[in-house]
Length: 129
Image (cartoon, rainbow, N blue to C red; front, side):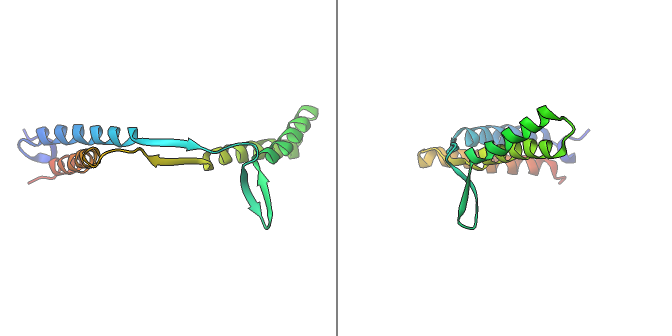
């Protein structure tokens, strides 16, 4: 009976590579810092010289919600309400910034060796010899 990839002893490389890859991925994702700059005066988009801020998106949303409460079958109300909600969600997602946390060179090398070395062991165990 053969192990991972049809190789004898491939299961050990498989699980060691998988564990290294998971540990390196965890440490890499843990070292990323997430910031946001979303506020109601933050410009989402600009058309020509006019900037459309996130607070301006709420105006058609409120109008659309009012139209929906007045007549629930009004497609313009649904379009304004849902379109504005999608625009606000897109603005929040677009305003997120990622940066790598300050770390020593040793920490970065450990993370990269775990990630790349684990991936190499994992993929090497799947290849038949």
